[in-house]
Length: 137
Image (cartoon, rainbow, N blue to C red; front, side):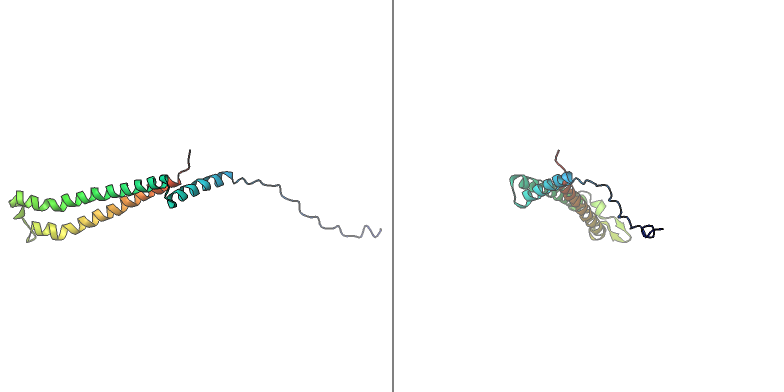
């Protein structure tokens, strides 16, 4: 045996893994659109103003509709009692119906209207956000 045969073979370097190509063009394009829309909103360009004006109109229309519901719901009670005085004379659990409706039932009614306003206003804002972030076609 020779000295060359006694040598331990040198460890082999690991083989490099095949290259992977990563394409970020679509992500960049989407980010550019979002950035452009946000810029239009922050710089208050015509497009940005139109988008914000649409959101404000939607929120105002919602507020007016629910105000009308409250005005008819609570404001209609005195009319009901004036038109039909016999309804005003009804007692429930020893309490006159007008006092019961205006003093007890009106609060859950107002809470329900307030809850629905918040829910619908958040939906308007989410629709606005979806519109702003929607990719252009």
